[in-house]
Length: 380
Image 1: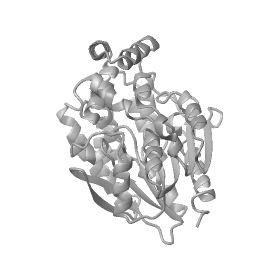
Image 2: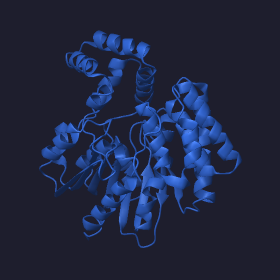
Image 3: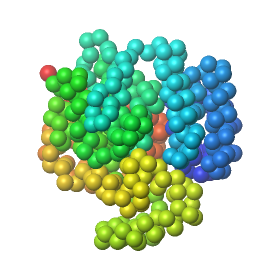
Image 4: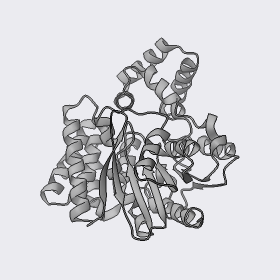
C-alpha cells in the first residue's frame, strides 16, 4: 500500500487515507473515493461522509459505518449539536463491528481517575509474551486504533488500550488534555497490577508514552509512534512561517494580547485554522488561544529525557505534515541514558513517509513488533 492523493486539500486527503490504510475491514475503497474526492469544504465533507455512514449502517457494515462516522465527527466543531450524536453513533458501530464482524475477544473497563473514569479495552491472549499499553494522541479515541494494533495480539501480546484526559470518553466527562500523562498511565498500571509492561503512544501519544516512561519505571520499553517532543511547536507549525514565528515570539515574551489578536485574525480568514483552534481549546478546556498555547507548552520532553532509562523506540516519517522532522533528530540526540535507543525515519520509497505511516501503517506495526520481540519479550 501507499499514501494516495485523492483530494487536493492536504488535511482532507490525510483523513481519507487514515480510513483507506486499514483496507476492506474499515471501508469500501471506491465508495470512499467517490464520496470524498470532490469535497472542498467542511459542509461537503460532513454531508459526504454522513451519507455513506448511514448507508453502511443500514447494510450492517458496522466497521465501515464506524470509520465513516468518525470522519464526520472529526471536523465537527465542539459547539455543534451534531458532534455528540455522531460520536455516539461512531462508538456504537465500532463495538458492533468488534462483536459481529471481527468476533474479537476483549474486555471493557472503566478505571477510576480524577473526577471520572479512563475508558479501557483489554485484548487478552493466552500465555502472553507480555502486556503492552497503548494510548492515542490529540483528540483521538481508543476504538479507532483496534484494527491498527490487533496484529500485536495475534503475535502474542496482551493489549491494553486506554483513553487519557482530553481523549474519547474522558473528554465527554470533562477531563481535559494534560501534560502529566504518567498519572493516568500509573492508574492503569495499578488497576491491572502490572509489574512490567511496554507502552506504545500513537501520534501525540508518542509524547505521552515517553513522558510516562520517564516517571513510571514499570514501563520497561517505550515506543513513540511517532515522535512528538514539543506541543507548542507542533500546533504553531500548522501556520505559514511568518505567522508561526510571530506567534512563537509573542508567546515566548508573554504577549497574551498579541497572541490572541493574531490567532483570532487567522481564524476569521481560514476555516481550517478556526476549526484547529476551536478543537484545541475544546480538548484542553481553555477559552483563549493564549491559554491553549499555555497548556501545550507544558507538553515538552526536553526537561526529562535524562529520565528515560528504558529501551526506547522512535519512529517518524520524512513527509510528516503534523510533526516537524527536526523533533525526531532533536529527540534522538537528546536521549543519552536509555538502556537502548532505536530509531527509524521512514521514507517515501519505503511507503511510510506520512504521519504514523498512514498509507502503509503495517511497516510501522511490523517494526514495532520486531523491536518488542527483540527487547521487551526477550527479557525475563
